[in-house]
View 1 (cartoon, rainbow, N blue to C red):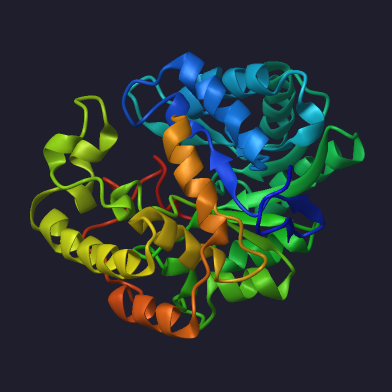
View 2 (view 1 turned 90 degrees about the vertical axis):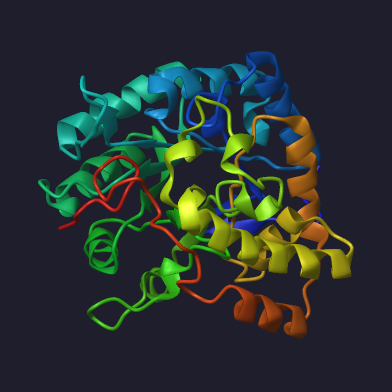
Length: 338
C-alpha cells in the first residue's frame, strides 16, 4: 500500500511521503512498551509509511534490534535508514567519532543488529570536528561500493560541510530539525547561504526530525507536569519556565487554525512541513499506533496559499522561545563542524 500523497525522492532514493522516527521506542520520551512499539512499526508498513529511521546510538543498539525484529519478513517493503558517529561516554555525555575505521565498524554492527544485508540510507549522525569530512564520507562511499549501503546521508550538517561532502560522493539526504517552531534551515548563516538552499543546490532531499516540535505542536502538552519523570523534555529549555508559557501561545494559534480546517493541530503542523517541497520527507516519531495513524492522515491535508501565509505569520523563523537543546554540546546538539 502506498501513501495517499504518493512516494517522494531523496536524491535517487524513493521513499514514502512520511517516515517513522523510531528513537522514542528506546529512549528519551519515557518508558516504551516493546509489543506496542513493534505493532506500531507493523501498522506503519500497513499504512504505507515505509521509511523507517533509527540509529546505533538509540538505546545503545536496542532500537536497531527492535526495528530489525519488526521488519523481519517484510524487508522488501521498507526503506531503512540508520546512523553512526555518536556514542555515549561513561559520564553520560556524548562523543562523536567520524574516523574511517569507526565508519566501517559501526556499519557492520548495525547490519548485524538490524538483521539485514544492506542499509538503504546511512547517515553520519553528527559531523566530527576532529576528522575531515572528506575522510568520513570516503569511508562511507566504500560501503556503497561493497554493497552494504545504498545511499549516504548527513545529519545536522552545515552548508560548508555539505559542500565538502558532495565533492567526495553524492549525498541523498540531510536530516535536520525542521518544524513550525524550528526553522533554522531557512535562515542564512554568516556566508549568506541557507543550509536548505545548499542542500537543494546539490539535489539533496530533506528529512525533518521532530516535525511536531517534540510533540508540542500536537497541542496535547499543556503543562510540564504532563511529562513522565523519565521524559527528557522535563529539562528542555522550550518546555520550562517562561519559554514554555510563551510557546503555548504559539501552539494555541496553530490549534485555532487547525480547528477551522477540521484537522488536528499535529496534522496541520505536519502538513506545513510536507508543503515545503516534494523533496521533504518528515519523520515524526511515535511509539503508539494511535498517534501513528493520526500522523499518517496528515498527508491528505491540503493547505491553501492563504493557510501557508497564516502559518508563516504565526510561526516565522525564530518564533520559539528557548534553545533547541539543554546545552550546545555534542549530545544531540549543534556540534562544531569543520
